[in-house]
Length: 127
Image 1 (cartoon, rainbow, N blue to C red):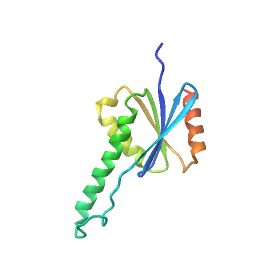
Image 2: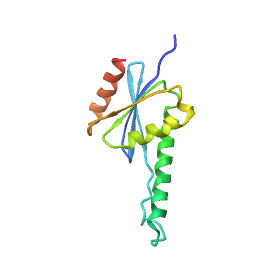
Image 3: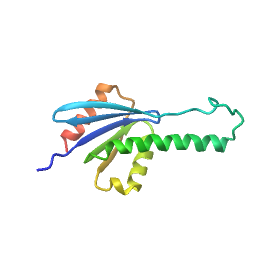
Image 4: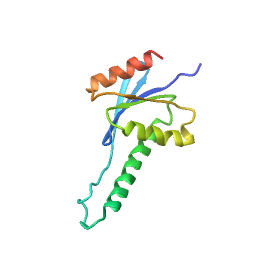
């Protein structure tokens, strides 16, 4: 019998907390978005389009890093208070590497780390 691997991801546009349930033990890791905000580089005269493109590229790199982290899981719950979870979900659904992974999203308010862990435990216990 195959052991199903579960992971919950609490995220916003700046940071993702990966909460893995493995053999009754909760392991938590973090992935931070690496944003170099406009105005922090040497050329202060950039157009809004250039700045938006740069921010979008950094955001996509952040989402791809999260995607790489969940490739080895069977069930994924992505939750949080912002639209970042929906943006990530849409990118993952468009990528055929994630076709066999059950990915669901859930809207939540801002939660403490203990509340996030409890949510993940309860979610996967009821499946």
